Image (cartoon, rainbow, N blue to C red; front, side, top):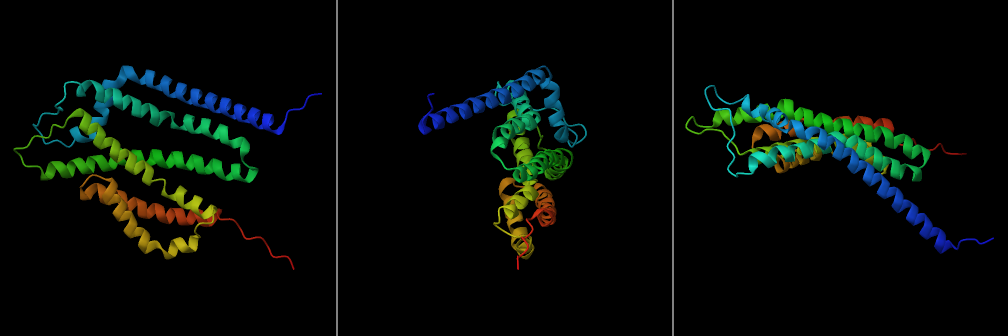
Length: 252
């Protein structure tokens, strides 16, 4: 009976992993593509909905329209929005494909911790985007309209408006992942909950610096990102205290 050499076994195992990776990538892209195709007929309504936080804050009597400085801006901006929204909606499916690929190589206790962390990360990202849409964007545009002179008409370009909103969504979605990041750091042994409590002052300063760097240059959005991040930092400390590994009992 012929037996494969160690080199042949390693090559066969590598090919199996590459084929599995290709399958997972194809499934993930297929799911995203299906959602994108389903959204394309509604791109105009989706963009109108995205523009609502700005339109609702415009002064009475002002034209509630955008001006496309580029002739193709009015066409490509809704298509780009549909693509981003397809990625946003398919992210659980994409993460499931990634999880299915790496899960067979994890230990049971690693799987037990990874699943709630993965679900929490998805939920917090969605919560951050919802917070940005329903609270941050109306507040930011209200502040802009209040301090804009009456002789100036707010009529942004569709593409530039989309880029502005996407930056806000990404900043708040990623920032809301702070508790998950703290829990992972504690589980890896890089820090302890006690060290996180002791470094609270430095963390608050760092949060305000990060908020100033990743948000548009207005005080409203910076404060509305920094304050929730400070609260999420405290939530991360509490969650890390619950999930930190218990020290093994000493044997006499």
